Image (tube, rainbow, N blue to C red):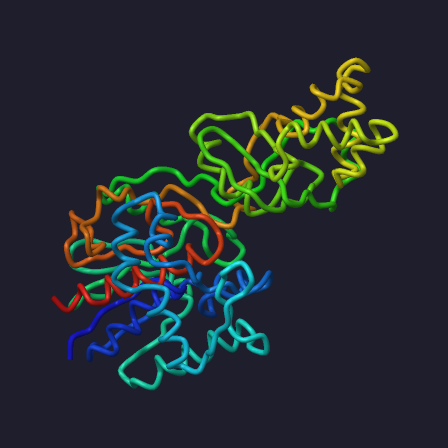
Length: 387
C-alpha cells in the first residue's frame, strides 16, 4: 500500500487526505498542535460559512489566480455540499448566498463527523505535536517532544501548513524561512480580509460599534456595497475586506456613497422639501455618524448649499492609513509564489512534494470563497499524487 504524508490538519490537508484514503492510500497526518483544525473551528465562531451558492462562473471570478480558479472548477461548491451531506452534514443557503451547516450543527460537530469519516478507512495515523523543522528530496524532519524525528517521504508529501493569520490557532507562518532556504520562491505575508485604519476625526470615536448600512465603498478601481462596523480605529466588514487588495496596490483614499440608490437630484429634492437641512438629512435616513461628520467638517456655506451637500453625501472620502495586522486579519496574501508550483500544486523543485491552502500566494474575499479554494486544492493534490 502506498503511503502519503500530510503536514497540517486544516481543511486543505484533511481534504487531501480524504481523497487519498478513498483511493486506497495509507495516510499519515502531522500537526504541530495537539488537536486538529483549530483555525477551522475558530472561523465558525462568527457563523460557519463553508462555501457559497454562486454559479460556478461567478464563483471562480472571486479569485485572483487562474491556478486557484481551475482547482475550484475541478471540485466545485456543489461537489463540496454533496460531500458534506455524505458525511452527515446537511447544509442550507443563507440570504446572502452563503452556505452553512444546518443551524443545530456546531463547528466541532462538522469536524468530528469528518474525522470519523477519515478514521473509517482504517489505514490512517495521526501524529500530533510534530513540528516540521526540515525537509529535502528524501524526506522530512520533525521535532516531537524535544526529539528530532526523520521520516522518509515514501510515495509523496503534501504540505498544508496554513498562512500567517490567527497565530494563536497554530497558523503562524513560521515555515516561510524553511521553504525559502530550500530554494522555494516566497514573499512575506501581508494582511488580507482585514479591517482598515482610517483618518476619522477623534470626535467620531463615540460611534464605535455602530454600523454603516446600505452604502457603497470605493477604493482604487474596485467598489463593494454592504454594511460595515465603525471601530475605534476605523472600519470592519465585508466591503472593506474586499477592497484590501486596492490598498496593497497603493490606493489610500476610501470613498463612500451613503445613498447609492439615489441620484444627486433626488437627494437634493429631499433636502429642498424639508423644514431645514438637518431635518432633510434625517429624512434621508443617513447615519448619525455622517450627519455629525458633515456638520463638523463642512463650512457653513457648504452645508447650506444643497447641491454641494447632495454630492458630498454620495462621495465622502477618508484616508486609509493601514490595514489591521496580519495577526488580526481573516486571511493573508504572501507565502509560496504560484510560479513555484505546477498546475497540480506540486513544487517544481520537488515534484513529489505538494503545497496547498493558505501556504500559497493567492487572494479571495470572504463569503465561503477562501474555504472552498482550500477544499478544492486538497482534492486536486490528492488526485495528482496517484498519477
